Image (tube, rainbow, N blue to C red; front, side, top):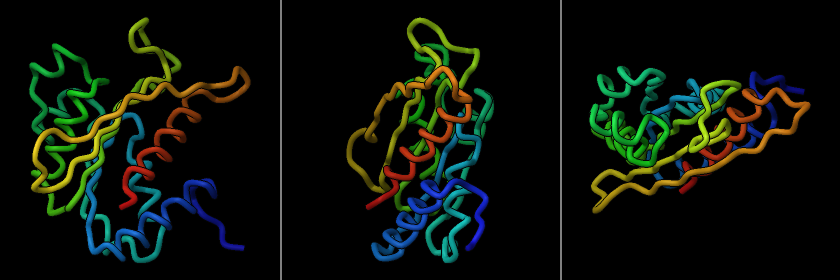
Length: 170
């Protein structure tokens, strides 16, 4: 039995992402915040992933989002880092600063602290953008639930990683 770095469900989905994108002839880029590079790590666990993954940006701080991906300070100040506007800008910046055909961006509140009434722990936003796309990228806000007995932070990051991998399927 082969041992992998990540849980089997993440590894299995990453293998599907790599195979499907190879078949589609497209490359991907990632702009990760709360997942801290887990999506890129999942993809690179798969043999052949170099044909798919162009690059990943781990932009955990607001400064990194602005400097590496071109997210406007006005977006951060007006909507916050955990907002559809921010992940739209992150995804667009990942495309601009890569050779990828599609980019997925993730930002969220993994906890246990940092949540607010408007954006409680478990709030994660995603965006997917395609090169030469007309209009705004796709965006989605999710609220991941955590059982009392679970490690909430790990659970939220795991669920966000799975969701981001799903967004990378053609």
